[in-house]
Image (cartoon, rainbow, N blue to C red; front, side, top):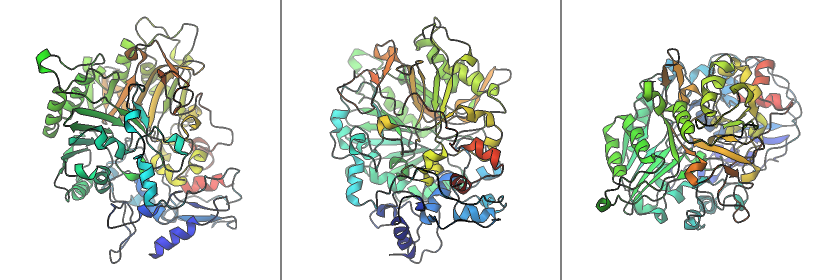
Length: 621
């Protein structure tokens, strides 16, 4: 056993109560260490391989720093009563650093964007940090106890191979909306959740080929999620990497002759390919999967993620000359989205979709593609696409009621110096849209609830502080929009057993004033940013979008309903009507408490705070 492995094991054996716990993942499992038969995302060097490196997959800077810290966890003890008055920022970043980096889709300086995603940003090493506050006794609640090293049999449990997948996919679940399985929670909360191995299972069909659209890939890990009999079937990876990051992904894919790459064009600065979709072509038909997880182990392990599974689409019946289109125009919209890439490798997938019958689809596609759009084209993408669909199909809100808006996300971009610049003007107006015969109070009168995990949520999560690596919100951006933080609500998901599984899922919805009904529900890859949703230019005549995003919108009319009832328990079965919609977190959302630490209070008290260690120290005061 290496010295690093012994150190990790030693630290994990410490008490999990405050005074003797570690800033590391609560599941530093054996299978995260390099093994000949398992793809490794660890940077623990093999003998003779030299210095520690970053993860083998491309990812955001926040995730890279988190990954590095998992390899060198830092132990806090109740004996640590003081810290040096001065400390270089390089020491903070290298020794502790959960970096509050910018969003995956938030504009960054061109010099940073040109760097490969598998290198650590050196700017974090150059500047010095302010005086650190004295570390005192920790606050009340402790993080969840570690579940101990995860063994091979736990991987079997996490994959869900023992459950009846067919029972999950029958007509009693009209929405086909699922959560991913989470390691470390009660089994009942995973009984109807899915792992990626379930989605790629032979039970779903005899795979011919697949296309994986995503932001972050670990190719070795991904290949092992396919059943052995499908691992040599053609796989197309659609990505947005450039330069060194692209070369790194090509190197990952090189050992696999069946894996080919397709680079999405990102012609507008600071855009990302953030869409997360699977196209699965079977001998028996075609399936579309739209989800929120990167294709790396961490995203399918202890996070809250969402999945929409399409029906198994059969081939079009040529004799009946049917188009195979649904009432939601899903087929045409999906083809339009793929055509927007304007790359040859996707043509065969466009052809495959045209050859299949998608008429059973009951959701609307809401996507974003990079570009500047005017006239009718403005309504095709981003929040204007959502606005157009809601204006055509969203139910009317009772005149005497004020139905709020809820947005839940894992990253935040720059939204402007005040709420009127984007959030509560063009964006909120889109989310408030109803059918033409519907009426709604003025924009300012409709409450807006934004759910974004607090520091306490992260501290007490299954992953501990490393979960913050997947919740990027740059301090530079936060300092410019203190007004935003009054909208923040904490993460709570007792309904799905996932209060301690930090959300990487993104959802938006319009609940009733008592939160018992829904006018609509959207699950998407799009975070709260103008890069993802688009922003108006040229006096409102042009919509500019930087990134690729994709989601599905659930509207009651598509299911023969006036409104959705909110399901009381996400995984309940017979006690509620099947037409009750399973919202994955608790309603109504709860505002941050007076003692809840969030970016606003940190910015006010410590204007130059840059890293999670500063947050940790503030929590321990």
